[in-house]
Length: 102
Image 1 (cartoon, rainbow, N blue to C red):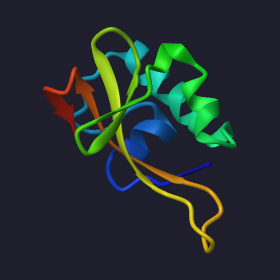
Image 2: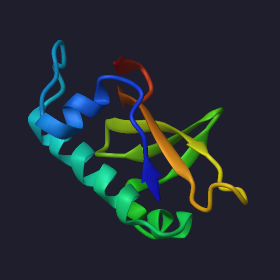
Image 3: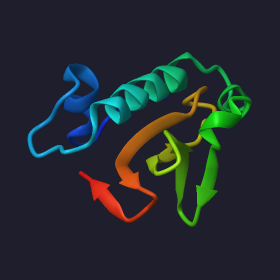
Image 4: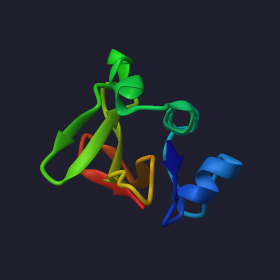
């Protein structure tokens, strides 16, 4: 699968920190591992099989659980003949869909 960043989450992923980010370090570490899982997956089922992520669609956004409070919210550009794999776009880290960053 392919992951494309469209905001400050790229900096957080690459460096482990970002300006204005007050997310606990252990959540940042889980975020980095979740992105790695997305990149390593060959099908969407590879992500769903990890029950700890509780991968689900909530309204118009997809969600991966990082712990009991924090979620990685993302959108998906679905595969077609021109793009053989889905592309994931991480949008926010949220405290159960309320406090969002960025």
